[in-house]
Image (cartoon, rainbow, N blue to C red; front, side, top):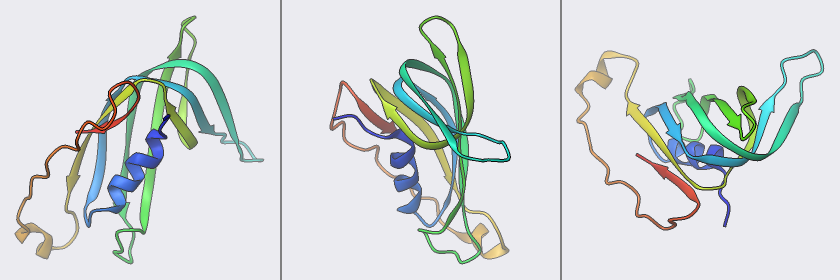
Length: 137
């Protein structure tokens, strides 16, 4: 079962009342959809086998404070087997073709009340799939 890395990261962010910073990611993807920054907008999807060179981004809580209401997104750079490098803002699917490991940091931000919060350490997710999938560390 091929998993959407971008969807998994957003789902992980929405489960917490904390901001999320994506520090890095590694693995391979078979499809990447990037936003086009032109007057027409839209997206472009690249298919094939791409190695992740850089994965970063953030998801912050919106003003409403609801865990489901987030601002932010992901940026990625990938390399094809012939050495072509593409990248930009992820604007749709990011399909894993191997195990993709994503290192994230969650944090509280905002007013002084947040400084009093206790840090909780969450166990890493169980390894449901070994050949393809998304692992958040």
